[in-house]
Image 1 (cartoon, rainbow, N blue to C red):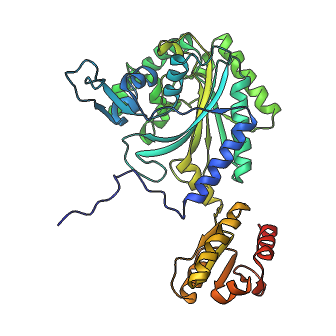
Image 2: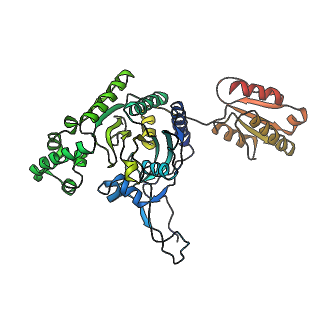
Image 3: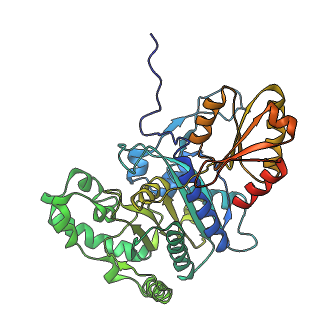
Length: 427
C-alpha cells in the first residue's frame, strides 16, 4: 500500500480560505513601496552557494546550519553547466539582489530603490512563525549614503503598519559601527567572554574567536547577565558612524516615529554595518520580530563589485499574517454574484450573462448543475452578495431573478440590464 503523500515538514500549504489575507498584505506592501519610489526586481530562488558564504558570512548559523545546498551532478560535456558546482535555495534575498545589481550594472545611471518578494528557505526546527520555507518582502536602497534612506525605510514600514491596521509595533535601533569600530570592539568582547568562559555555552564557545559579536544575540537565559555586562560597541563608535547614528535618530524623531536604542541588537548576517533595526510585536509569541534590516555598505565589494553604500530590510510575511490575526484583521474575496441555472436555454444564457458581468468588472461564479436547491446552497456558501436565478421560463421572458444573499431585500424579477446596473451600484 502506498504511503500517504504530505507536504515536506516545515513547508506549509496556503489554502484558498487563507489566501485573501495574504493578498491584502501583498497589495498593501506593493502600494506603500510604490509611494516611496521602490521598483520590483525578481531574482532566482537558486543561487551559487558561494554567494551566501561570501555575503552572509561563513561563520553564521545560516551558512553553517540552515542552508539547503546541493551539488549539481557532474557531466562530461564541456557545454553542460551541471559541472558539480554547489548551489543553494536562497535563505535571504539581499545577496541575490546585490549580485544582480553587479552582474547587470544596474547602478550605472545612479542609485536604485528595489523590492522583491517570494519564498526563502532555511533548515530550522519548524515552529510558530518559523518555517523551513517562509516568505519575505525584501526592500533595498542601493547606492545611497547617509542616514536619510535608513530613516526612509523605517518610516515606510511605520506607514505599512498603519495601512494594515496593526500596532503598536516596537522599533529597536542600534549602530554596529564600521569595520574598524567592530575590530576594536571585538578584542574587548573576546577578553570579556574569555574572563567568563565557564558561563559560555557550546555555541558561544564555537563563536568566541570567529564571530564574538553574534554571542550578544544569544537567547540562552543562563548567559544573559554576562552578556548584558559585555562592553558595548555603541559606546565606542568612530566619529563618522556616531554622526550617522545621531542623524538617523534625529530624522526618526522628526518624523514622529518612536524608537528604543537597543545596544545589544545585532543581525544574523556579517554584511551589516552602522544602522541595524528591528520591528517587534508582543502579540505572536517568541518569534516576535516581524521586520528587520539595516545598512550594508561593504557587501558590494565582498561580492566583487565596486564599493557601494546600501540599506535594506526583510519583512516576514508569515509573522505579519500571525500579527494580523492577533489584531482580528481579515480579508475576503467573495464574488458579486452566483448564477443558478437549470435547463438548456438557461445554461446558454447563464454563460452569456456571466461574461457580461465580468466585462463590467464584476466577479461571477457559475453554478455547475444540479437542482435549484443544491445550487442555492452553494451560492450561499460562496459568500456571493447576490444569486442570479435563471430557468428556461425566465429566459423566454427575457428576465432573471435577482436574490440578495447578504443583508435585507427581496428577490425581484428584472431584466439583465437592470441586474447589471444594480450589481454595479452595489460593488
